[in-house]
Length: 299
Image 1 (spheres, rainbow, N blue to C red):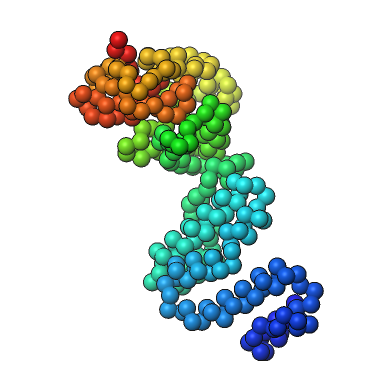
Image 2 (cartoon, rainbow, N blue to C red; image 1 turned 120 degrees about the vertical axis):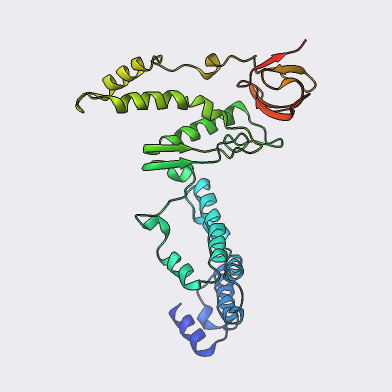
């Protein structure tokens, strides 16, 4: 390999097929090396290209996505690595007028700075913890993820719920749960998290004047009693005063406590806990989590 590199530097030409310099290299290795050599020769002519376009060209020329997927230890890691290529191209576009800043960003990634913000997938965060965690995208169809072409089965719902548990338990001190407030309804996991009850318990714990040496279990017990909260897990569906979620059909008539009468026009997601789209007579079309919404069937 060293002799090949020295010959390329001296001649600026790729050797012929039968050249002894290529002896010992497999056909695939020869192809990959030749493509990289051609790319190096091509780069000086592309000096006027915008950084993002040039970087995308290099990534495609060296089959970076394929290389990352082959070298990853698991599929989730491969997906994360490939997404980072897209992020890299975006950053190159944002810093198009300041190439020195982009080079500095490559040399000193944000995740290596104590004042930086680390952006990670939930899979990539397994086993890690931080003082502050912000979890966004908590919308139906995003988390849990499903669509009309990819409905949510009970098994996949449980997988998404376990992933959500992994995400919220990465926070040691503060946890922010965010949804976009747009046309998608908030994730059902927000209701299952009993956020309001957790805040009340936290306030009770913070207001205690007893010595710090008190055990965590005793403090939790006193806090729950002060908040008049039941100790133990309460199924979310038992807490909700709504009509049964199962069995909704397109065309079925219903009444919503706030929106009035309407007709079901779409049923999707987990059949046991579906998301329904309703055309209300006075409120237009609305997407609802059937088990959470105050609904009653109209005979």
